[in-house]
Image 1: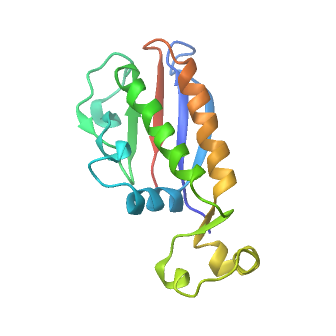
Image 2: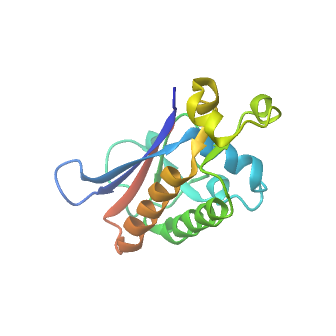
Length: 163
């Protein structure tokens, strides 16, 4: 079973409650991989200025970020004030992913010790459930970056829904 974080890109000026431009799913095991492979100080995911949705109803585009990092289980908002950091985060992820030379990346330490082949990972459900597909995640992150590169005003926000 794959757990995923939902990255929802929204135009707050369209519709009464905003309009979803695109929703992109990022494998939770990839996020776990990030935490293991990027130091806490350098991990933009943990340090980006963000907002939480407990601020109430209304638009988030121009609000001053009051938090740092993404909520693992809750909902996090990234607005115009943090778009440059968001771009840097996606570029950081792309850089990390492009260094990986296999398609399926095992994250679970128990299975990693067994050193299974890529073919085994694809064909054994427990191994597949303990890994993420590099190509799928890389395509999703590139798509996120492409969208954020077009965000040029406070009307655009990202809502990240954790587990």
